[in-house]
Amino acid sequence: MNRNTACEIYRRLLARYPIIDDRRHFIEFHNPFEALILTILSAQTTDRAVNAVRDELFSRYPTPETLASAEPEEVEQIIRSIGFHHMKARYIVGAAKKIVSEFGGEVPQTMEGLLSLPGVGRKTANIVLSHAFGINAGIPVDTHVRRVSRRLGLTLRIDPDVIERDLMTLFPQEVWGDINYLLIRHGRAVCMARNPKHDECVVADLCQYYQEMRTVEEEGGMKRGCLHKMLR
Image (cartoon, rainbow, N blue to C red):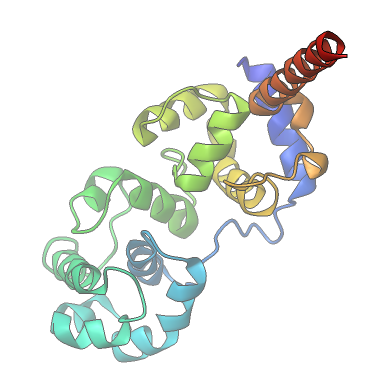
């Protein structure tokens, strides 16, 4: 896909899902520390589940220092409703310890620094940089971004890191944070994994998946029509 078509997709999705008060995130946080911890917890679970444990978690451990001194087993009891809570409890305690010992108690504002923390991969680091610091270092690729970008024809790849590079090539850096938000919104509201709502899609005419599906249906209709004539 060329950049002009990609930018038209961006413009239509932005009109369909306007960004209000510069809000591009789905988890409830008040500072970079909360953004980091909740984003680590959000892997392979829902934003609703993460938001549900937020108040209890940060009332007990409001700072990196308090979380760093916690026993993972104590944290597990608070986040037990979240998938992989045993592993995630160790991740967030480990991340807090490293923030205290190596970053002066402050969440690092660089990709390299964030990637050095337990439980932080490129997607998590991109989310924290964008949402907590307003830094567009890349485009986080989750399941929605992966599915929607592949269906639209923004990328043909499967690997999230390669998809990210394809998207970064198509869109100017100043809208990288928007692209993640818009593709997630569209993936949740219209372009679901099963039974996407093509009749509600504002970019259907630009969508490779939709055009290919229509071609298959038309060819199938022609074949059925020929068969009907042969059998009459």
